[in-house]
Length: 252
Ligand code: PEP
Image 1 (cartoon, protein in one colour):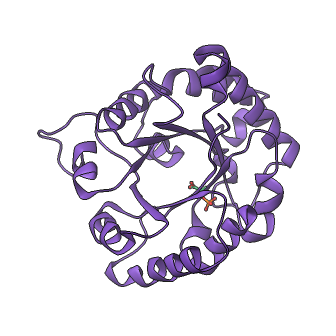
Image 2 (cartoon, rainbow, N blue to C red):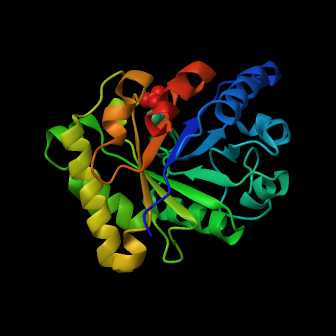
Image 3 (tube, rainbow, N blue to C red):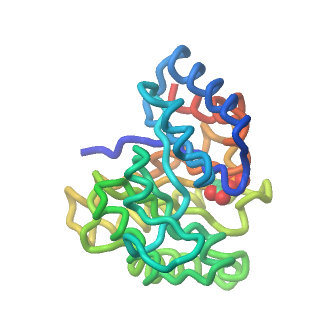
């Protein structure tokens, strides 16, 4: 089955209680505007997940979290478990974002275990992969993204129903720089080929593969039309409802 597209917002460490007004505005645009042919997701900081789930209940906007621990409970100060996210009624958890790989030394093996924890709770894992500028310049993009990160971060139990891949070149995140559409298509097509090789034709072709890195209303339509791109993971431009809705427009 063809993947269902998703436009996902990652609020990162932004937002306080009053930020719920942006979610309310977004819900109004998504529910009352022209219907988009994609799912819509906002992943606020953990402090806001409960509140956002309540506000988004019954709307077309889904709510998720940005990270989780591999364990279900225990002595892990400051961490949250996937079952705690599930308990709040959120449906998705991002794992392996490049900021967590860089800031917290997360390896692909750890990301694999986190994704497994997400799937165990019957939530959807959004598994992020992406090369640094130095790796791209060295010609190592596909080696890093596909042969290393994708192969090692995606657990055996992944299916198109419970797992989404997000390709996010690190050098494009928050910088305003984006790869060319051809470059995006090349990496996405290589990711698709690896998924087909590993999981077989039917399953491998079913995974949604998001592009992330400086997506905005002005470039979304072009990027979303690239081969094997099934949506976007959006940082900065997801914080304002009008900007995020302008990206969702690519699917209207
Ligand atoms: C991200 O961090 O997932 C991201 C894509 O950020 P931005 O859209 O701001 O580049």
